Image (tube, rainbow, N blue to C red; front, side, top):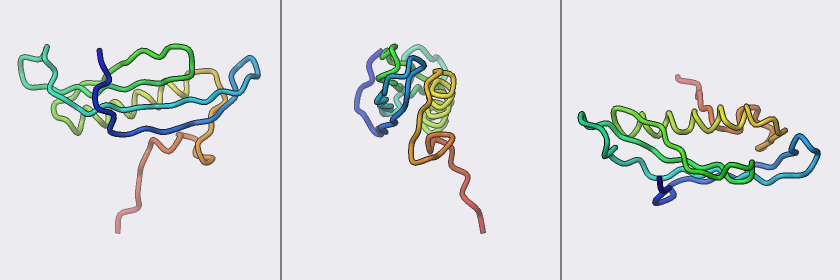
Length: 103
């Protein structure tokens, strides 16, 4: 799968399990219709570069927004499970969870 047009990117710094410093880049491609779906589902590609496996993955949703949100969620899970100590501005979820206060 190809990443395609990159619509968002973030640099995360960290320390790998062996103590070496790592620079991790996460990228999100533009959501697009899933060519394998018979009912109009979408997919959103993502890539994590710097943790060893630079392959492109994707999350699927019933529309482009759900595919994008699920792709962000999938990347957050992969980063949390990486075994590396990662940091982006001190945010424990790398700034990938947004829960603004509603007034």
